[in-house]
Image (cartoon, rainbow, N blue to C red):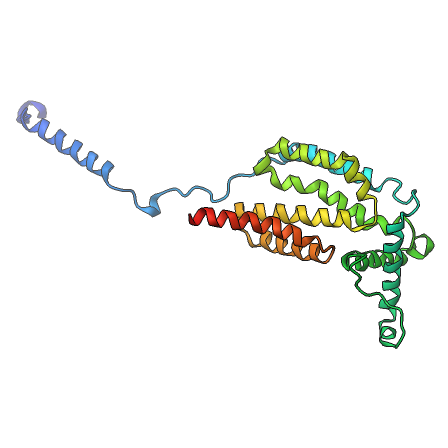
Length: 265
């Protein structure tokens, strides 16, 4: 006889089968309810994936165009116009400072005529940096031994161009197109263009003040030390440029003082 005919059939217990199935279901539910261990979790990337290079270039392109426009308006024909009276004072005393630095020991001689800080002319930031531009221009062989109507205005044009770029760092506050519009207005503003081609403390002061605002705003948002250091640098250079920085401190100080008083109730 065949095997399946001789072996007794295994009888299934109709009562036991549902119990076994329920036991398996209970074990599965218990496994689902147990918390997953930390090492079993798949960690998400810490830094979000950067957009592709093409998208970033398209995002930067409108700003780069405005920055280039601002630079052209400030540097094109920079030395064509004769010096204003105030510009001539800054140019002369910067040249005097350059000569003093070449022979600084002579300034200790009695009756020596050397550069010194004068509140009437403000400074001393602009005089030191214009003298530095003179020296670099001499080294590269610029006309008139590096001292001319162009070189005296290079510092103003440079900081005037930096002003155009600063709203870019406020995109999180102004939005992309709001920041772009701010950059564009600063780039083509007749007043900003004029003073960016004018060797006086006005544009230096404006640049450092806006840099201070941008740095403080970014530090409040990001809490990164570099923005705090940049804010301190901007405030220091502003003090070294013009005494009106006391008014800037008064404006900022009154706002933060009122904010602290409001928070403390």
